Image (cartoon, rainbow, N blue to C red; front, side, top):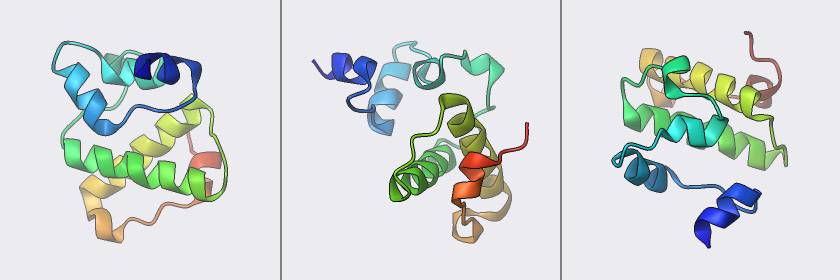
Length: 103
């Protein structure tokens, strides 16, 4: 039932769920974006990546905005890179991170 809700868009998987399925060989990035992880962000720090997801999803929710997957992914990638470079306390993403992400 939970998986069906994810697939229908009624809800989204948690980071914990994605971590669990990835331990069994599932490509969590593919589940979220439709693109294989080998084409996406190199994972150096799972906690920082989780924080980037939470920040971007929090901004989207605050503004009642559901970004297209490719925008969401680019924004997460951009924020993730900033967290790795500056630390989470110095990163303050905005709605523009979702709307105007450079390619």
